[in-house]
Every structure is written in C-alpha cells, then in structure tokens.
Length: 232
Image (spheres, rainbow, N blue to C red):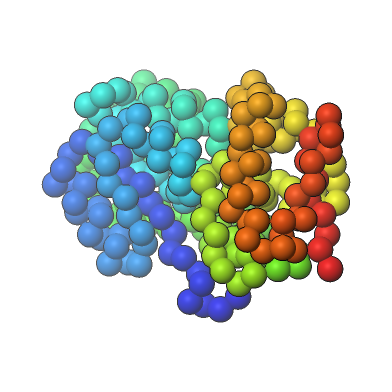
C-alpha cells in the first residue's frame, strides 16, 4: 500500500457552540485530520451509521437532544469508536452518566485547545489496530489502518456497516457465518434481521461486482449465512 492511499483520520465534532466548533475544526485540520462539524444529535448518529468516523468530540448541550442520546445510540452498534465529551457541565453526576453510557473521556469548558489535542492523540494511541494492517485476497484488499477497501486497485467506498461486515467476513475467511453471528457482531443482538442483512449484502456485492474475480468473493450459504471465499 502506497502512502498516497492512506487517508487521514476523520473526527466528527458535534457542538452547538459555533465559535468553539470553528476553533476545533481549524486546529485539527491544520494537524492533518479530516473534520466534520455539525450541531445536532440525530445527524451525528446518522453520520456514524453511514460513514466511517474515527473519533467524536461531543458536546452534551445540543439543540435537538441531549448529547447522552448520541453516546447511547452509537454504543448500540459500535463499542470501539472513541467519544470525547467536551461540555460546560462540570457536575460529577454528568461525568458519571457520560462514562457509564460509554464515553471514553470528559473535558469541561473552558479548556485549552492544546489539552483537547492531547486527549485526542491519546485516544488514537490506544485504539486497537489489526496486527496484519493489510488483508489481501485476490484483487480484494483491506487497509485496516486507513479503513480503505480496494478492488483491483481501485478504492471502493463502503458505509460504516458495510465495512464492518466486510471486515468480519475477512477475519473469518473460508468460514460460513450465520445470519445471527453477523448481526450480533455488526449491530449487536436484536439490532437487525436477516432481511435487513440481505439488503446490506446486496449493496456490498453491487459495489464489487465490476471485477469478475471479486464477484465470486462472497458466497451465500443457503439458509445459513455468508462466507468469504479465498481467491487465488
């Protein structure tokens, strides 16, 4: 994998404080990160479902809902995404609720932007990274560090859930995975049904179908689930 294919990490800033949000955006973009800035809780959850986000900086005081809703919603389908709460709530109850809900860190306004940068870097330092870094199967390649997927050398964009399905299949190559197993590992128990999973699989197949060898990559195990085949 060449360096030009490595994407910078993407930070989602969810904050109703526009001046502070702009400061965070500029600071992290200057450091080489991709930054998405929004102000509403539901939009934050939707973005995390549809896109690959590497870290969230989250205020608790949002116009459409409490920021705790974002933590609760995201933890239902993603336990590894780092969430740093950056808020004006300094009471111990808010801190406890945030950590119990699944926040990784908590910083109270007013805070020095350099301290926030240090906390973000600290979260990235301890993120779990697949030891292999690169998975290659025929013309199909996953760069685990950058969360990029390539088919025949061309990058293919997958949504957050599609990417999680692809990685799960790759980590269990040549093994038949049941619908229930995939659903529990991607969404959590009760988070999807077999019909919904089929929709996601159809989307994945459509995106990789232009390459003939990759079209044989994922096999449907009738009445059971799915399997990623080894491609020579």
